[in-house]
Length: 392
Ligand SMILES: Cc1cc2nc3c(=O)[nH]c(=O)nc-3n(C[C@H](O)[C@H](O)[C@H](O)COP(=O)(O)OP(=O)(O)OC[C@H]3O[C@@H](n4cnc5c(N)ncnc54)[C@H](O)[C@@H]3O)c2cc1C
Image (cartoon, rainbow, N blue to C red):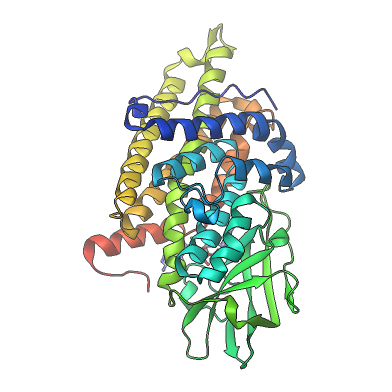
């Protein structure tokens, strides 16, 4: 892969809206991605391996629990810093950002919000330092967009809960130490349980042959009469709203992350277009290529404004789930469109691993599907503005 020459576009001087701390956090993440991620990520993706050597660095830049309080090992940052870290990591690769998102928003967040003090003390510091990696089991083979239909269930056996069922498409599953699992009790109420690797009857087979998020490990969670200690149930919240609360936090991070992938594609295409000559001129001098580049920077700028405003609303505790849906949907769609256009600007070179664009493009096919599909987020907006749910 070519040396990382990334220069972040900031067409509307959005840096003026950031505090010194935001810029410091963002720049540290950016430098780390240039130094540690860019040189190795293409190889990891080609080999379909999660680069485990990045775990310590992710912890050091505060990517594991950016907004979790420092007393539990988190970085104690605000929502904009969290978003900027996700943006920079996804500038490197969506798969690496997925690991950070899952760890922070889908494992640490529920333990912090719904867990007992003992659970927080036991798990959060180790998750923040990367000593422990977690995964989040909501999706099932027959229940993706409709997780409320889940069939994974547990029953009270006096001394423990007995857990049965299966989860599918679970990021980090093949190597995770713990899984936050959503399952129904005997009354059909959804609860979160912390399942640890090594519990009898718990296996995590890996999902192979993905063309997308190849540098992220994906797998199943299979529960065959797993005896889960009673103290591993998170008592703070039950019902579908509990996992959805985690998804709000992760989707917000994705809205920023997608900007990173888009910026990398745009920056690569702009540089290439100015250097590559055809018909005796740089291809950047042709109107058709300028149209692509001009539209890209316009869309990136709009997405940056959306993410920044959403971050302010989240810092004030005012962001709604529907607002988060709009930003996730818009920004991921923006990024995937930019990746496709940028790929074309590079001509044949665009399909090789010499450049990051094709990897981003394929990664974004997962990002536009997970954490609520493009369609589902549109239905959430539709429901929000009309008051009429159109899911069924
Ligand atoms: C790489 C990867 C990693 C993932 N990681 C995780 C993870 O860590 N944890 C986890 O729990 N899940 C994870 N997921 C699962 C992901 O969240 C689901 O794939 C997603 O929610 C969609 O579910 P599905 O694949 O079953 O598709 P379906 O729900 O079967 O949807 C198929 C199509 O039908 C459309 N559709 C569905 N319902 C409606 C409707 N009511 N109206 C209109 N259209 C509809 C969808 O938009 C989609 O286009 C991951 C997925 C991938 C690909």
